[in-house]
Length: 118
Image 1 (tube, rainbow, N blue to C red):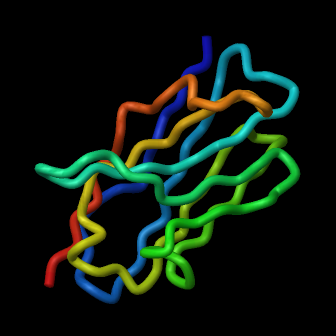
Image 2 (cartoon, rainbow, N blue to C red; image 1 turned 120 degrees about the horizontal axis):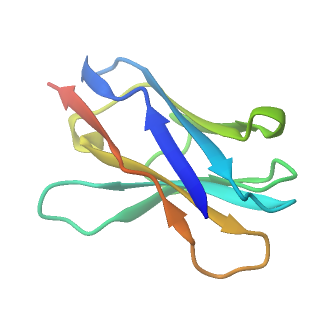
């Protein structure tokens, strides 16, 4: 089992910044991918960003240039730096974990609310 605990959500004005963190614990694999997803009210969950064990990053087009994903392998922690936030970024943000080579994410955090006011 792997446990994921997110932190760092909150309320921010449009144009502001927030930094989310997600710490993994338990039986983590030797290499794994961490991702961030979000779900806004009435919408499906969508991919935001991901980072591999070797620090290769992927982003949704909607956040490119504004969000930065990073990780600290020694701390089993992934971060999402969110800048130039927009009201449409409002959602519950979830971190997720999967072992390298596995198609679907295997474990999910409980989610943290991000609200961007206009």
